[in-house]
Image (cartoon, rainbow, N blue to C red; front, side):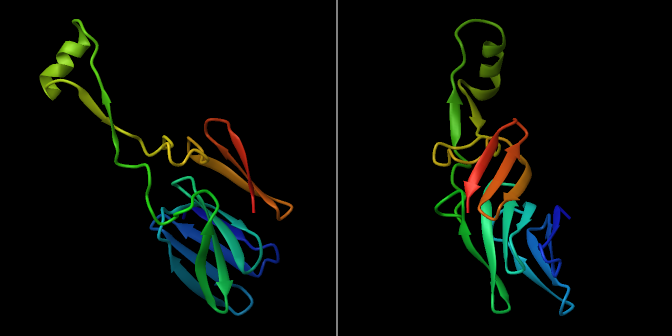
Amino acid sequence: MNAVNWSPSGNSCFIATHDSVLTIIDNVNNTQSSVNLTHSSGSHIIAVSDTQIYVVGFDRHIYLYENSGDKWAFKKCLTKETPLLDQGRGSSVVIEPTVGGGIAERLKQFGGGAAVKKTSIVVTSQVQKNIHSANINSAYLINNKYIATTDYAGFVKFWNI
């Protein structure tokens, strides 16, 4: 399990596992349901009510899930416009070796010139400047209006919900 949280009423329990499954346990009716997340697995769950939660993904984005009727479903993403697309990953940056001896000359033996470094999942892309640059380590609901998140680099962000 990555994250567990209870609704404010205590009637529902929410569980996010590392295989990108969100499990909802209804303690009143003694039932459970599951949602396969289409994004990265959840690292935090913020329960607004028995029918509305925010899931903070390991991809550092915040996703809203709601229960309409008896079915839980994704509604929106607070941190990007196209939540099901994986923007910013897989691109590469060319690093030119410096002129001279030493390590730059040795690197040429292995790469035939410039070394290529893939961008990290931790580094934000030019497209997504509003997300944290490091993994989120805490997330809190403030007066049912804002979500406050902090990351391992020490930054705090507030999200208007």
